[in-house]
Image (spheres, rainbow, N blue to C red):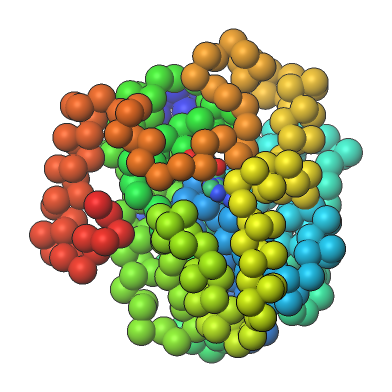
Length: 325
Ligand code: A3P
């Protein structure tokens, strides 16, 4: 925690059981009272589970695979609800009173509110922190939730924080934080359980990163059917092509390369070593894109500790086997 707190330059709070930067309190009421629309489409997830991949898939489906429209930056067409309260970029911009930042940075909730329907909204909040109107069923937007193997998520999160948030530390230290439920939006397990427990909600679809890797076209079809869209075979194929790792990596509306350049060139976080100082940090948003990287990267001891934790969860939720193993 100290390492995160020092390098992320923030204090953390436990907000209704969720590990969050203290700035979350600045927007908590606005999120709770956010006016949801029935024709919204939400993508919800724990960070690094493939959120951007699903956002782009959902966008492609709702736009009949007409991807000409997807040139606009993802944070504009598919804004991130609580960005202002949870990211280092927003925090530093606010503290340093940086004004030359995109409009979703200072007030992401307002930005979402002012987007025109049908809105597409991303959130990493666990179910119990989503706006009240979603929780109590007063509004029923379509929600797509993506889950990913815990160990791979942890590795991806580690690299992301090193590259994008000015975090330093070893993978081993980060795994300990992850297992100690001391990473932003943690505990990871509760996040999954919160949505899993709502599986009977007709407006919720839960998908897996690993299924997208195995058979992307099937997941596209399933998502289209959930969103009430019919896509021709050709459109499914062209969307699958657009969603390939290689294509997404080159897509400037998705890859955050401009952002990385900006934080490096302005030394935005003061002491970031992501320009090569940290060997483990590859400094790319689309980094590896594989399933099972943990098998080669995590120590046997760390794998054992993850497995023990997973075992305790499976003791009470056997049906989660497919999602956690
Ligand atoms: P890795 O760090 O393991 O490469 P999020 O969008 O939730 O932050 O998730 C980012 C993770 O999803 C990264 O994982 C990224 O590479 C992976 N990802 C995004 N698009 C992908 C794609 N088209 N194919 C495979 N993996 C993808």
